[in-house]
Length: 130
Image (spheres, rainbow, N blue to C red):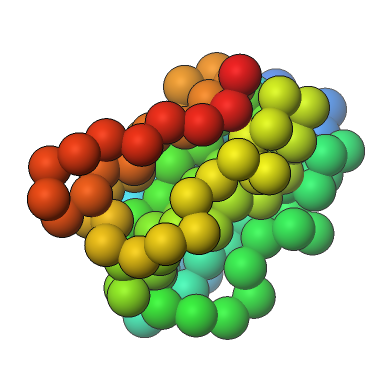
């Protein structure tokens, strides 16, 4: 859960570090949860991940850049950059990463269990993954 002061509170299963690895710092403006991993967006546009990394949910996460939105699927995540481009990381078992759009102009993102969706600034929708 995201508190009003920008800190994160976690509870539940900890088999993959979902609680143990959760951030203790503040400054978060959004959080998203996958099956056993979570992603947080900080006020400065950076992304922080914690929990399971069996499919690159953490190691594949962005380490720099200015992001404006995040979303999580079962084992993959999507981050929207301030320039309107999309970055995907984590599982690629159903082309969650390989089929991601490479163009700019996106304004919103969302994830289902094994697929992702992005909304372009012209109102069209792009989907990829399983």
